[in-house]
Length: 353
Ligand code: KG4
Ligand code: ZN
Image (cartoon, rainbow, N blue to C red; front, side, top):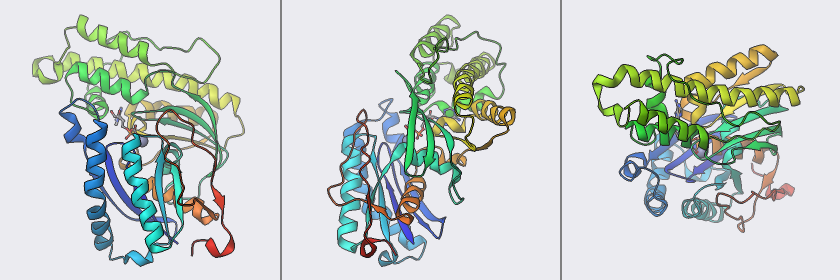
C-alpha cells in the first residue's frame, strides 16, 4: 500500500509517500523566511503559500521518486489542529485527489502524527506515553494504539516551543528561535542564571510556561542581554543564559514526565516528539528518565521533529492498513476544538489495496 501524506497545518507545505512500511520520499517547502519578517506566522500568507505550492510540490515528489500518481492507494491529510485556512487548503487538495483518483481519504490528527513519527518505519510499541512539545502544543497522551490516544495533560498557556521562540526573540534570534538558542547553549554554563521551574507544586500533568517566559524576559533585561544574539561581545553571557533556559525547560518537562510514568507503570515505551524534542537538554533528561525506569524511548529523527508530511503519511499508512478511512465530508478542525473520533472502518470493497 502506498499512502500520500499532506501537511499544511501551519507554515510548512509538505508532502510525503509511505509504502511497504517505510518512507519512500518526501518534499517540504518551509515558509519560515517569509514569516520571519513579521516575527511569527501570518495565517493568510500561510494559506496562500500552501495554495500556490501544493500542486507543483506533488508533481516534484512523484517525479523525484519515479512514481505514477495512479500508484497512490490512499491520501492522508493533517485535518487539525492548526490554522483553519491552511488546513482547509490541504484538506481540499486531499479531497480532490481522493475523488479524482478514486482512493480512500484519511484525516490525521497532527499531534498524534507528531508522536508516531518517533517510530516511523518501525512497528509502533503500545501502550506508550507520548509527550508532544512543539511550537503550538505541549500535550501528554497515553497511547493505546495508533487510533487510540488518551489525553493526560496539556499546557494551560504557552506551548514549550512558543516559550523558546518568545525568549529567543527577546535575545535577538530570528523566528523560530529554539534551534539557535539550543545551539548556543552548548557553550554555556546552565547554572549561571537562576530561572524558575514553574507549575510543579500540584498533582496534575498540565504545564504552564508563561511564568517561565516572563521570568526569562525580565532576566534578559536585567542582564542587558536584549538583542544579544547580534552582539558578538556578549556571546559568553548569552550562551550561559541559553544553557540556563534550556535546563529550566527540560527540568520542568522531566518532572511531569516522571509523574506520568509513575501513574502509567505498564507503558512499554516513551515517545517524545515535536520541534522541542530536538532540544539537546530535553533529550538528555528524557533519556535519563527512560534509563531510571527501564523503559524504551524513541524520538523522531531531528528532521521529523518539526512539521513534516512523512509523519502524516506514516500515520495514514498505519490507519489505512487497519481499514480506517473518512468520507469527503471530513471536517477540518482548527486549533482549540477537540478532534472528533469519527473514522469509519472500511467495507471490504472500500479497503485500500
Ligand atoms: O513541531 P513544530 O514544527 O511546531 C508546531 O507544529 O507547532 O516545532 C517548532 C518549534 C518552534 O517553536 C522551535 O523554536 C522549536 O520547535 N524548536 C526547538 C528546537 N528545534 C526546534 N526548541 C528548542 N530546541 C531545539 N533544538
Ligand atoms: Zn506540529
